[in-house]
Length: 365
Image (cartoon, rainbow, N blue to C red):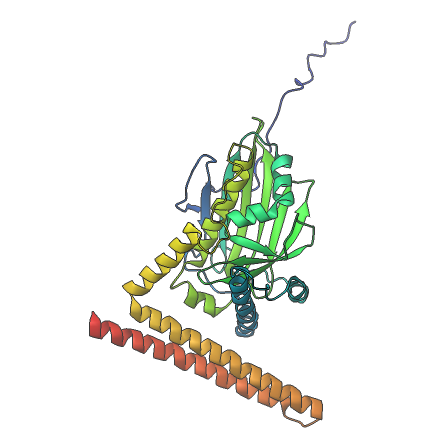
């Protein structure tokens, strides 16, 4: 008796089953955020507090991040000023930037996604490029990709390195430094960015490129983040932190799309001090201030209280360290007392700012 015929046939060689992107901005737990759909079909979906981001971490963790952020912001402003003043040596130098980055730790979000932590999924299409080609463009041309998002890389980077640390400098508002660490996964065509101490956000995000089986690729970017310190809460009353991030990545996605679709010169936001997008951002912040000057005064007073708190904490730290060094007891007590005093000054400033804002509104509105 003959055996039954084997009616199974090998699949055609050109059959392609596109992998499902690791994140979908249209997932049921995400809500859409307005963005320029554009030729690359760019979309954003978010879950959690947005645009008013939550702040993560304990009191001590927030104070530590505040100190790092203030130190980086001061250097970032100097770097931005010298970088856009012809004939002026760049300060801090590239060597100084490398040393600063080497001493920072990663600062992942703390808390529950959707409650304390915001999740954002960005997605776009890249016709005429395989996933590997699009991934390689990002790796080999980070200055173009980040530059389109309004971020200059310091020190300059010809390509991204696995484990590499970079300072992303933005023109604001306000100008600042954003330290990050990069992780590369060429097998998955994925790039992960982790924020470091002093970044405005606690966060991590992964860009994954997948083939669409139609001669192109899909770029899915899955990000989780939150404010790193209460000062971020003050800042975003004048300029949306998450809104700035959304706009930056929208332009970065568009730059990658342009490289394979006839727009290789796309610059997006760019890093010029006279960038139209940058000027627009400053203009929107000024309109916010003009529309509610009382709130602006409140933010100034609150920020001044945080600066005073940071200064008092440092004085107490130096005094306590000196007592420890000389062997005189009481170093810990001095640090605790000055920390309490600093917190009190910050609290008084918060209350005072609120009262001033209420007084101005009562008088003029």
